[in-house]
Image (cartoon, rainbow, N blue to C red; front, top):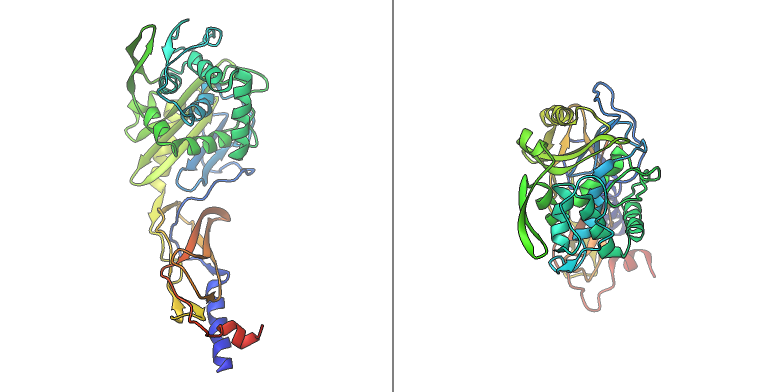
Length: 384
């Protein structure tokens, strides 16, 4: 009896602890982590730096000078808009700071004495690329542009943007204001998880109310890719003399969601379309779940001898030709009663080429009550 029990435990331990599989399946997104990214061979772009990122997993599909620190112009407003949309009181009216709106470059048309909302400023940043909108939001939220820049840098650190430093809310040139193509892709992935941000940046035009007195105005989006490319759904343009043409875009087709970033690219519209067409044509999606072993965990001291394991079905992963999805499953060799449905019993970590793409939590599917007065199996076997 003792020998049989030990063999049973060993079998489950072998099944669940550090299971390594190489079948090609797909699972949910995992947070991207800062990394040094080599250039992709066999495909080039006119951009000084570029990245194609799988928005579902955070996986880098294409890279050129991905970690190079470069000015990013008004794509900066992705960060400014995200922070703005995360504030309370989106529809509260206030009068813009007169000094904040005295700024060169593109504008949403704010004037001294105008009344506006944070929501309107978000549109003003993302569609007409208003430098006045970015500064007005910064002063309203943080009290000054400098204090807002500190907020931007704190958020960048949280996201793992190791090659970024923000100085201006608008993206106007400053020697200490820079980012990288990879960092901007990380930022955009985070921003697109905000439903309001995703909605705003996808609009070709929008009616926005502000002024003194407030009145409706129509904004057109500077992002021409929304009209040029049917699958495009955002995000932000940028240009300064130092930065050149910068573009961060997002597109989705057949469940595949991609983010493309180019910094200092003279032909950005066409380069983005070229990269999208290449990767949408090459990627295939695979169904999740089948790589996780379908087995129950033994329960000691319970009214049932086994507990079913379950997990949330995550979204697919897109794979390039020749790629495979690997999984390492770790789980408890057995459980102690009582077990409650939802108790975490393990994890399934998925990766492609060593790059993590998903961490799926395994949980108990049902309750298992403890048997009163029954000595747990572990205690009977090993004492204690």
